[in-house]
Image (tube, rainbow, N blue to C red):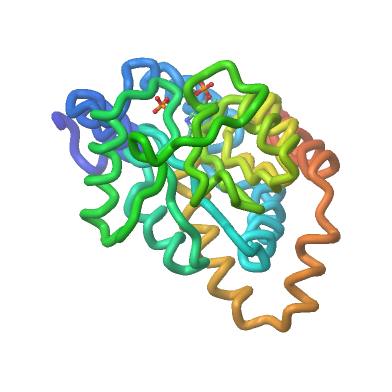
Length: 252
Ligand code: PTJ
C-alpha cells in the first residue's frame, strides 16, 4: 500500500488492496474485482454507511437465523476475502454451517477457501468437491451443486454477494433466503425473503451484534421480528433512503 491511514479514501483503498491480493492468491476470481466495483458504486450512493432499512432487515435476518432448524451461510470468493473472519464468528454465534458455493467453481478454489476459513477457527466447511453431490433445479451455473448436509437440507440460507438465479431457485425449494447485496435493484435482492442492502464488511458484524442481542429475548419476541418483516416494503424504504441521501447532495 502506498497510502497512509489519513488518506480520505483509506478504508476503500485498503479493501481494494485486500481484494487484489486475494485475487493474486486465487481466492477471488478476476470477475470478483468487477463485481466489487459495482458494489462500490452502490455503496457510494448509499453514503458508505448502514441505512436504517438495512438495520431493520438485519433484525429480521437474525430472527430467521436464530429460529432456523438448519441455518447455512453460503460463501464465495468475494465474501470470504472481505469478511471471512466475521463469517466464522457469525456461524459460531448462530450455530450455522458454512458451505462453499462458487459461481466460478474449481476444486482448487473450494479447498483454498476452506483452508482460509479454518485459519479463523472454522472446524468444518461443507460443499467441497464430491461433498456437493446434490443438484438444485433451475440453476444454469455450477452453483446448482450443493451439499446434502448443508444447503441441501437447510431451511434458512444466508447468501452474501449472490446471483439472482440461485436465490430464486432456493426460494422455490421452500428455503428462506437472506441476501447481503448493496444493489437493492438486483434480482437477488428482489427475490430474497430478507434483503440486507449493505456492504458485507458492515452487514456481517451487524448480524453478529443483532444475533447476540436477540438471543437474550424471549422466543415470542424473536418471532415478531421475523413475522412482521415485509421485504418489498423494506426494499422500497431502502430506495427511498438512498434517494433522500442523494437529495441532500443536490441541496449542498
Ligand atoms: O467466487 P465466485 O466464483 O462465486 O464469484 C463471485 C462473484 C461475486 C464474482 C459472482 O457471484 C458474481 O458475478 O456476482 P454478481 O452477479 O456480479 O453479483 C454480485 C452482487 O454483489 C452485485 O449486485 C454487487 O452490487 C454486490 N456487491 C459487490 N460488492 C459487494 C456487494 N454487496 C455487498 N457488499 C459488497 N462488498
